[in-house]
Length: 339
Image (cartoon, rainbow, N blue to C red; front, side, top):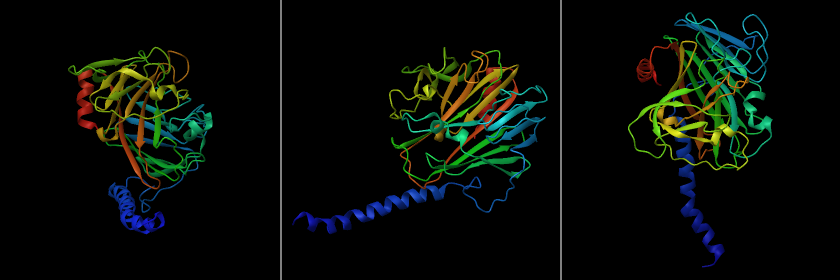
């Protein structure tokens, strides 16, 4: 039997395997709940004239903005290129937690670990975002497939009854444009002049099987000891040696045992909580929000390994902003309210 004789036989043998793989990928996406207007076309929404919407509930005031510049009484001096929660205030602290001209829960980067021009690495900042108002407590930021990465996404910001912000991401890669076979996504929180730049989580030293303890995460400079990963996260993501987003792959000396952390600013704790299955990585910078050693960034990353074109992916996290009493108080809140 020669090579040409083998081709029909191989097609008969291998064909069903490829079909089954495609069916499995579609089935996985179909099993996900439909959580945003990206996946549920029956959901109604409006697109407001202004590029932001105000949500109020449970003593929390939130302003969600697209990535346009705003300068009015609600968002004075807000800079273009920053989206998400432009303002987070409470009755206990009426000043904005975030740097007023920037934002928190800001969709910052799409990457695949390769060196790219700055507009490509910061594509979520520059590609247009459509603000969709679903109801009084729910808004979304929809981004059509981006020019370079061709990633379509929708982020839902919902203010729950107890004042918790729930952020749900749904995204669909529309082309095989990620060279290393994974999708890297990054969100930033630019904190306005907290007394301490550090973050806090339950964890242990990397490489040691010691009992969990409170870790006070700090970093001497931007991109050094910047990212903390989970104790069960052994994933390795290929990247260029000179990859310019230094926060992404520069590991700290610690690992967290539970997927949440907090920082304290002016007597208030900002808690970020994640689902274990999303395998989030925690990142920080002492100067991410400008004014070195005044405005730190308390960030997080979500990776999609072995992605499939056309498949829908989801990530869900929650953020709380509460008066700080103790680490144990924050741990109890995180245990009760994690997604």
